[in-house]
Length: 193
Image (cartoon, rainbow, N blue to C red; front, side):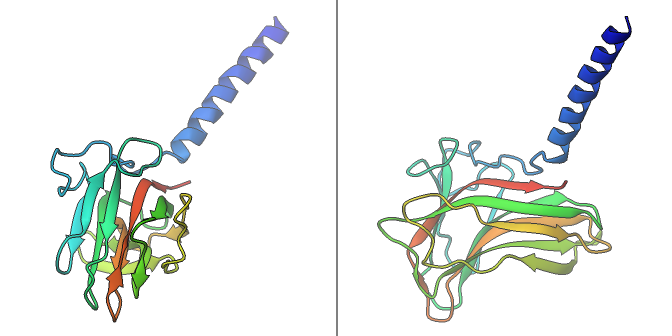
């Protein structure tokens, strides 16, 4: 009887622990692989927003993709000092730590060039919707692989005091002379251990 109780305790504890670990690392983003998208490829996938300083160079495509059937293609605007991106606005807790990752690959035919740079960033907002601060990953450029998916991350950033929302995204900056080419983006994640 004693052995049966010990075995039952180990099984229950193991299942509870595995469940807690899964919840702790669950992706906080909705539609992280962009699978739920409208029929118009120029429209953003469900729960995502596109933004642009000028013309939008973002489309949903199945041309190149990671784990699912769809991804985002982001094309440089080819004009100086322009920017665009794909973002998702989610609830956050002040003082909590977050990690954001995505899969990216350079376009084989029209790779990034010129002064184009890519950056992962989170903008922290307070209850009134005002920006408190930003956390940003190092810039990426034309050196992104054209042959394999890479997984850049912005790791262990702490939401500042007063933050209630985080705008998590990947941004394409054309730079001071204008960017060229494009890249594919897929399998986004935001986790909080």
